[in-house]
Image 1 (cartoon, rainbow, N blue to C red):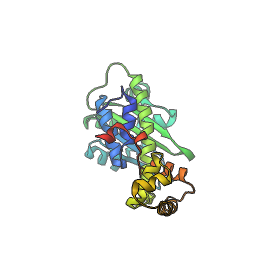
Image 2: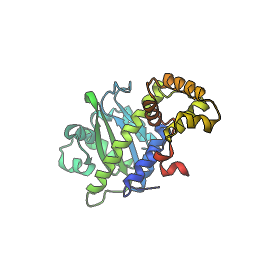
Image 3: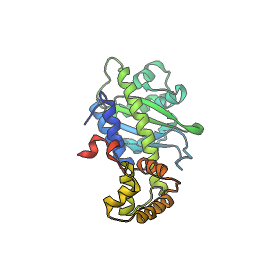
Image 4: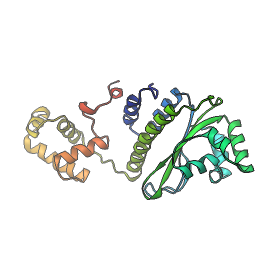
Length: 255
């Protein structure tokens, strides 16, 4: 499992995921390899683009009993770390919030309860989208914080978190709305060979079908993908994960 010292491999691994859940699992494993063993990905504001309200724990590897306790007590409203990242709009270390902020009695109780649940220290950062939508990560460790803040690690986490955030959102929307069309095996073959740079005549020879049959499959592909043109169909099919030509295939997809 790569860690954040090789950011490119980490991105390729998340890119190889086929579902939002798999992408989150990879993200958690990478974070754990970098010294943090808990991750929660939340919607800090309503998200009309996903059809979801404000939600703590859209995806989470936090202890389940803590998540239940946190949500039952509506701690998202008083969490000082959440309030800080919403205010400053950038990542922060939890210990900076705790030491530099005048905390209410309720906020102090929340932090102590979190520590008792195994969330000793961490980093949080916001993801600000269009129309004021804000998502966020809280990445925690079960042992006490290092004596010195690791800003290089924070920066790498933020970059990878941004990539995961966009990947997860796109997958979630497609999964929820049923945007991924179902192609026949032959339509998939036509798209894949086209993505590898083959002409329609070459595809016909490779697949043992006529040129006119290839064109028929293209018309079906255009209709299903709601596109006009061969290049657009190839680009969209790669983005949706319908085909993965050799030229863009990540190393993990060869395993």
